[in-house]
Length: 140
Image 1: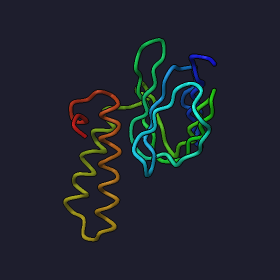
Image 2: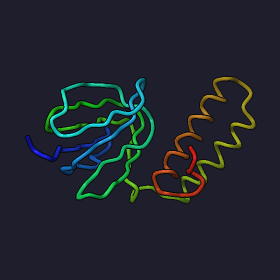
Image 3: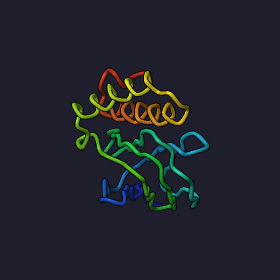
Image 4: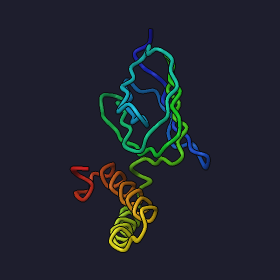
């Protein structure tokens, strides 16, 4: 058994990340986080919104993931995400503008549907800020 596992993260628009890593942890839609090591039992599960982390060459790295599915095998983890980005892909100015807009929409929401949509936008911006290590994203 190898001490590494191939992690691939893709969205409908593009491949986001692919590398051999020693550990992966990602949010599921219904069961919290799954931690995956090489040799893991095969499974398929819905992916939730949040931070995926992986360990490569002894260093921890972060990606955002928003929905989708994960297929896990003993030698590979494939995340098919609705949206995902590496820390380098995150535009902090845009994310802060999105956060401010979501806060405004949340205050102005008149229906439960408007409130849910604004809250989802706010949550997404906070996940992105947390991934980038921005202070506004801490404590999420």
